[in-house]
Image 1 (cartoon, helix red, strand yellow):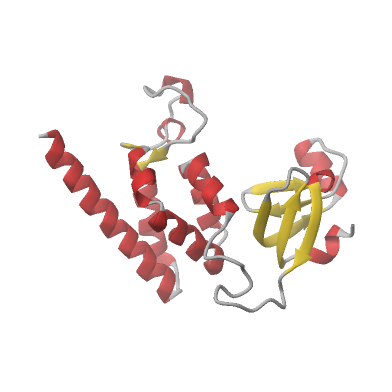
Image 2 (cartoon, rainbow, N blue to C red):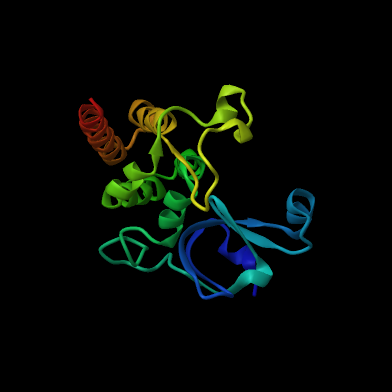
Length: 191
C-alpha cells in the first residue's frame, strides 16, 4: 500500500480493527515517524490521530466523491465522536488544523451531542494550562477526557474572532450561545 499517494487527500481509512475514519490525511515518512514516535514505519496523520501503516487495513480516496456531505459519507464521523470522548485537548487540535470542513464536522458533532458534552463539562481550564500538574486535578481520572468549559469557550471565541469562513463563525457563535444558556440554567438549578 503506497501511503504517500494519499498525502493531502480526503480519504476513508479502515483500521485493522475495523474502525472507519474519514478526513484529509497528511503523509508521514518512515524517518519522521521513527524520530517522533519510535515506530519504524510510515503513517498517515488525520488530526489528531496517527495511523501507522501496519494498522491500516484499507484506504480509499474520496477526492472524487460527491454527495450531500461533500467528500464525506456523513455529517461527521468516528473521528469527531472520538474527539468528544477524548476531551477538550483533542477538540482543540481539530480546530487548530484551520481546515474549515473538518472544523464544521466537529462543530456539528458537538451540537448533535450537546447534552452529553455538557454533562461531562467541568469548570475552568485544564490544570496544565494553569501551571498545575494534571495530578492535582480534583476530578478522578476516567476513560473519557475532560471537557473544560473555560477552555472550550476560549476555543470557540477564537474561531468566532479569527476564522474567515462565515459558516464556521455562525456555527461557533450558535454553540457559544447554547453553552451560555446551559450554564445560566445550571447556575439557577444550583441556587
